[in-house]
Length: 595
Image (cartoon, rainbow, N blue to C red; front, side):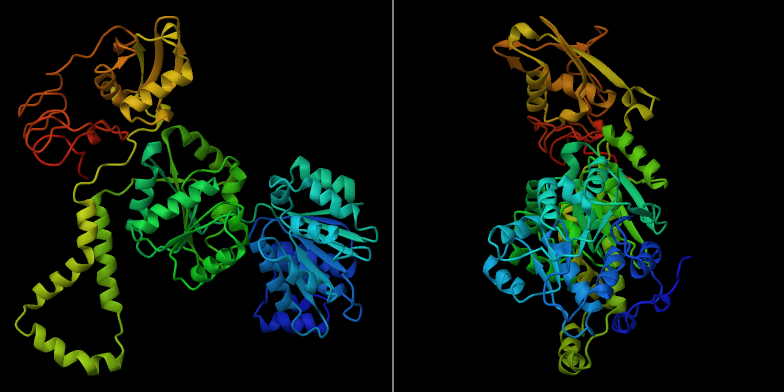
């Protein structure tokens, strides 16, 4: 029978009082299932629940209920994968046990001097919260003993195993001979997690609410399709289009998190990286700035984000989709907490549409394909944002007293409308400069999902280079991408033969690639490129418009990628839409469609 209020749990009075002080009333589903069992009859359990579903209280309250504060040795151990989560667990459990006199809870983790933590564990805490690596370090130094340990909690067990802590977990559990119960909490029940259970747990019960966070109807799932090499510019445009954003940008690697964050910071965005290569002092400082909203966004890896517990995050942005679809649920679950709504944006290449469909099936929600806004839309959105800020601003009374007369004197002769235009212009001029001549970043197709028209189909191309030229698939791909600046992910079905090769490209990119490669030489040999059906595209004069010569010329003249003065064109770059190739603004190149 599920208990629907914390007051109905048979907990010690100190815990009930602390929970009441914190304003907690209704337990989450995992708490309703687990807490009554562990209070009345402690057994080995496996709790399956997503991040953000209240797992810390689910095991923390029963742990503290069973702790004997009169006994001065380690009775309970909580293992967590990251320093941030370790610190967060200690902080939360300390709040639960604030009225338990004599209770000591200590956290030990890497990234800080071990000497201070040795002093902490030698002060005989009843509860230790630890990362596996630092705990083993303390065990090897004989600074801590787990001989009398009764309870072990493995929090985020799947993540610890993903991070390579399996041997560490085995070693730690083997060093707990008096352990009475093991409580394992995980987002997923992988074979490795089940293996831990089989080796170290006995007659366990499973409590699963793993789908609670995957079907959060308050999350709007959006995806934006662009070419791989346009990801950063797309990210930047989404940030500019969302001026009130307070969120997390997820990357796959620590290097990406660092590089993306550094580029954003140089452009003036209030962001910071968060990843495992940062020392603990820096990570703590970053989190303090983020929680106080001095930072609008964190650029984080999945592992580093495990310790983030912020309820009012408005957006999650997947700079890259995770390899494991279930990791998407962890990421998206960072927003829309505590009954609030949130948005999860994913930047994907055309080839990743199938990944989106797979995640849709997992979370049982339809994702919304959204257009990457053009420059005019960004400017308009920021205009409304600034007007709203002005309309709702509440200047301090003291400010008005000091400066009202001065302002009236300065602007007495200025027309009201002119003053408003100047104020808004000062706010928007940088944005207008950036987006006055912006390209369309939308990929323009969704791979095989679209079939109508030549620009939406795949075209197979022939090239007169092959194995006798020293090429294989990898080297041919390198030659194509370096010669055209095209994203390698758009090249498919490569076949390298003795004296020729074939590959597929999006139909809308075919003419561009032919144009670029046909002017190249490879080891002194002139490159010849054409459609595989031997119908080569013509040279100059193809695609002329009434205003001037050359491929892709606009009505006003110029030709393909023309420069301002109609002279030698700049080198065009493929950005996923044939209309978005082109050189500088002005008379020549076609700079992309306006929406």
